[in-house]
Structure formats: C-alpha cells, structure tokens
Image (tube, rainbow, N blue to C red; front, side, top):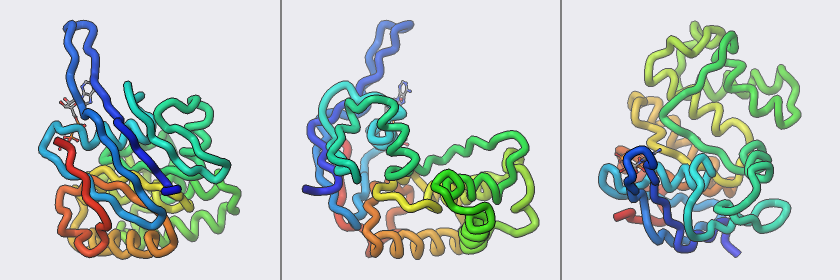
Amino acid sequence: MPLLHVEDLSKNFVIHALGRTIPAFQGVSFTLEAGSLLLIRGPNGAGKSSLLRCLYRTYLPERGQALFAAADGTIDLASAADVDIALLRRTEIGHVTQFLRPRPRVTALDLVAEPLLVAGHSLAEAREAAADWLGSLGLKAAIWQAYPSTFSGGEQQKINLARAMIAPRRLLLLDEPTSALDPDARAALCSRIKTLKAAGVAMIGVFHHPEDIAGLIDVEFHVA
Ligand SMILES: Nc1ncnc2c1ncn2[C@@H]1O[C@H](COP(=O)(O)OP(=O)(O)OP(=O)(O)O)[C@@H](O)[C@H]1O
C-alpha cells in the first residue's frame, strides 16, 4: 500500500452571502510512495494550495478519499475526526505555508524548536536542532532571539520552513516554500529535501520555480 492514495478528491467553496459556488479542484486522484516527491503544477487559481489544505484538513474536501497509511493504520484524511487529524499534524504530517503565525513573546529560535519539545526532546536538544536549521537556511544569528512578527518575508519563510520540517514527519506538504528565499537558502532547502527523501519522507509540493528542485521530483500532477 502506498503512503497516500488520493481518489476523486474534490473541493468547491460555497459563498452563501453571494449565493455562489467557486470551484477549487475536481476529481483529483494519485498515489504517493514513501520517499517520493510529487510536484503539483497548474495555473493561478487552479486549486493547488486548496488541494494541499484539503490534505492537511485546513479545508474539508466535499468528495473523495485520501487514504493515508498512518503508523497506527490507514486513515482517510478527507473524513477523519478532527481529533485524529490533530494528532497526525503533531506526529506525521507537516504543512509549510507562505504565512507565518508568530506568537507573542516567542522568539524565532523557540518557535522553531517547539515541535521537537512537543515530541519529547529536551529544551537544549530542541534549541540545538533549531539553531542548526536556522543556520543552514542562512537566518542571521542576531535575530534568533527576536520576535518574528517584524521579520522580513524571507526571514519569516525560513522560520516557517524550519518549524515545519524540524521534527520527523512521514508526509510534508510544501506550498511554495521557496517563494521568498534567496538563492543560498533555496539551495540549502533543496539539500534538506534530498536528505529527508533519502530518509523516506514523502512530499507534495507547489513550487514557483520547480527548477529549484529539478532532479528531486519523482512524479508530477497537473491541476487543470
Ligand atoms: N477560502 C476560500 N474561500 C473561497 N474561495 C477560495 C478560498 N480559497 C481558495 N478559493 C478559490 O479557489 C480557487 C483555487 O484557489 P487556490 O489558492 O487553491 O489556487 P492555486 O492554484 O493555489 O493558485 P495560485 O497559483 O494563484 O497560488 C480560486 O479561484 C480561489 O479564489
């Protein structure tokens, strides 16, 4: 059984106030193996981000299945209970978006370290790993102990990436993870993606510049 089997997944947005339905994506089917990277392509508004959000269950799909081979058994991401999805988000599925949600009085280093703390690592271990991630992505050390709400777009994206990828995950959903990164950070991220793939992590990504990850893509899926 593949890590993920998506069958006929569809999503429309119903805007009640306008009495309108906005189509996002229809009838999406694909399978994904552990250690594979699937690139999602498609024009603006085709539903690429919505597809990732449905798999992370930020959005509820309206039709279809997304069977995920979780450590405790197969679970349908399209219909699983919120409590089960919350557990998977803590342990098996990560989502990198372009938008950082900083928290008051939490430094950049601790925001990145947090998923490892939640996973049971000591504060020292978690901070060491966070420093390793932030260093490799080129976030200047002078701001590691600052609050990210005032960080630049690229700096915030580095925090997002490090936070989403620091703890072991079996599936990572990457929504334009390099859009605000400079060339060195893009190269560092590609190197991390390569290492994670070799360790068996599966990824589904939307990339503004797919050439960044040329050579790491196993399969492409076009959203019309
Ligand atoms: N929360 C929402 N409520 C209503 N409509 C939405 C919502 N989110 C997305 N849409 C609509 O769904 C469609 C797909 O949007 P989505 O962001 O998934 O596209 P995309 O392929 O990622 O686009 P882009 O390449 O421009 O980032 C668009 O027409 C968008 O306006």
